Amino acid sequence: MCSCWRSRSGNRGRVKMGRCGCEAEETFVEGIRAVRLENERLRAVVLVGKGTDVWELVYKPLETELLMRTAAGLSGLRGRDLAQDRLVHYAEAYPGGWQEIIPNRALFDRGQEEVGADKEGESAGLPWAYRVDHADEREVVLHCWVSLPYVPLAVEKTFVLRAGESALRITERVANTGEQAVRFIWTHHPAFGSPLVGERTEVLLPDGSVAFNVHRYEANRGDPLADYEEETSSVTLPGGGNKDLRRVGPMEKEGAGCYMPIKCPAVGEVGLYQPDLNLKVLLEWDREAFPCVRYWSNTGEGMYTVALEPSSSWFSDIRDCIRHGNCIVLEPGEDRRFWINVRAERP
View 1 (cartoon, rainbow, N blue to C red):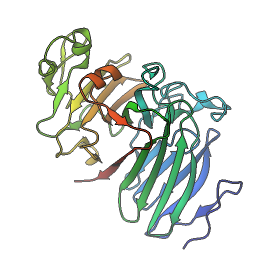
View 2: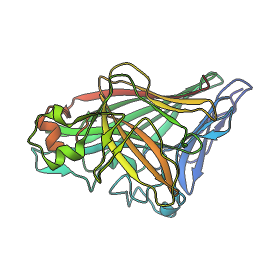
View 3: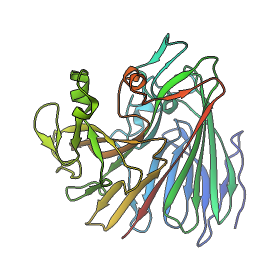
View 4: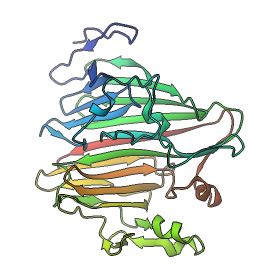
């Protein structure tokens, strides 16, 4: 039964979980304020004090952590007040987990201001306001919001966990609070880790998925865009050779990284299947809004991961996005909505 939830204003609170119910609890991780959402099948820890990162995502029937966390984790942020000293880049002191990258790249103030490769993911580097809107045995609802200090965007984000489900549901709204248009890329960055990621893990991609080799494109932008498309079973790597994006390589001491955007059809599963655990993790999202999934993998011992990153664009540079009509454009007062779910199941 429900006991109480106390607000952020000073008192910590908790909603008790029944045998087949839900629970929410305010907590701290390495000094960062967080909210734990839990039911009988899934446990998620959301770092409201750092970008609403999903820091923990555990499939409870197997007590298996689904996300990758680096060896250092959040220790690099210990003692840092992100309200006064926010991260400049979402990967600064990168801990792993799942970041929200708003904006991934951006151009605003009549093109005078830009978010480039050195300042990506302003949303991931500062605290968000939050409240638990609903909490009982049937579901818990965490509502978060922030106004970015540099790019004139305001973001609202709601996490929902329901009894009996092994799915975390996220809905969002981004609004332009400025006086000029904002052009930007919006990306989610969930990085999955061992034991879900292993040598026998299958990367699930829909039939008809096509890799866009952004490395070849950026080396020579003069060819038709179709010339940079490749089969996901054999993409050309920048250093030479090919890789099947549907397979995960073995862990190695040094390891190798791979980044490749994929144009994703409107239907078909995207996720990972680990046959040794008989565990499948699926990402479901609004593919009309985000027609791309960015594939990133690393096989090194210190960062063994596959990240499947739903994104609004397959280009890295905002000017390429604008040139090819592949970016989000918000006029003053306009907003854009999005939803994404992560689901774990045993087929």
